[in-house]
Image (tube, rainbow, N blue to C red; front, side):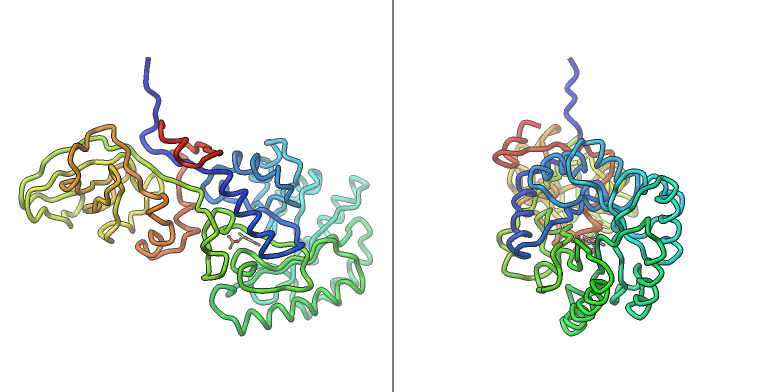
Amino acid sequence: MHDCSPRAIVEVDVDAIAHNLHLARQAAPGCRIIAVVKANAYGHGLEQVVRRLDAEQPAFFGVANAAEARQVQATGCSARPFLLGPNPPTERAEIAASGWGFTISSIEEADHFASLAADAQRVLPVHLAVDTGMGREGFLPTELGEVLAHLQGLPSLRVDGVMSHMPVADEDEVFSHAQVELFEQCVREVSMHAQPRYVHLAASAGILRYKVPCANTVRPGLMLYGIAPVHCTWEKQLRPALRLRAAVTLVRSLPTGHGVSYGRCFVTPHSLRVATIGIGYADGWRRHLSGRGVHALIHGQLCPLLGRVTMDQIMADVSAVPGVQSGDMAELIGPSLSVEELAMQAGTIPWDILTGLGPRLPRVSCSMGGFSRCAAV
Ligand SMILES: *Cc1c(COP(=O)(O)O)cnc(C)c1O
């Protein structure tokens, strides 16, 4: 018999994600949810997250492209995929034929989707994206009149939603309040010509910080995974859902003055017990975490990581932890090693750390009781 335990693994508490979705509902009372599961559900494993969240009846699952929409659909869930951004011509025929939710930001997209729908003798529901400040997608508010007039001539499209996106919900209240007002004006203008069923502006930071009275739908991403992008009253109730662990592969004593890893940036100041751990930047353990005072948790104790992160391996000082041996698991992200802290140490943001976790790491779901159930892995 071979022992197939993976060398490094991502364990996900899918019930924590469902709990966080309930918090999004409390923070945005009465709103429908577009549960954002793009980028492999922020590294948590798209399939297992969709399967669990579908029971909570979101309106849509938010994705980045047609391939992700297909992955969502393949789970057999009842909520439909929703493409969050603009779509290139190559993906539009599939989107139009599949009944996925999508946005339009230009007359060109409107005309293309209208002709695809007309060819299939269907009426396609579309969400009008409005650019109220993000500068990434959407019609400008000043273009709305012209766009709505143009849509009158495209009977194969029906305006089913109005949406926009907030660029500084986490840092600029003055701008964001003005943006909420501008969005409200846009929604009023659209509503004179159409009956959009879905009106949505807020992602996680917007949900946690702002009231958008005209909206009836929200698009939580990061907060579903238990991380608050802003300080807020809900912060303490969010439950982080991911644990990253990797196996110690070797433990040795190194003498004084011995370099550890490429560049010899760390040289032992005295003799040390050094553990080699089977994870590296090819797994998404960022090279920017080298020499930043990051720790691994081994036998319940924080052990400083030493020297540069290599492609498949990192090293930790285990001098203070007796009995560490090859095969022991080291925790790198978990209840006492937060993604926020790591992001800060790597000079980046939590989204980047989570979505960077690579395909080499298996995703295992542990529901009912959280991580303790995964302890055997
Ligand atoms: C990714 C994305 C979201 C989710 O953002 P979070 O900050 O992770 O909550 C919401 N809306 C759009 C349009 C997105 O692209």
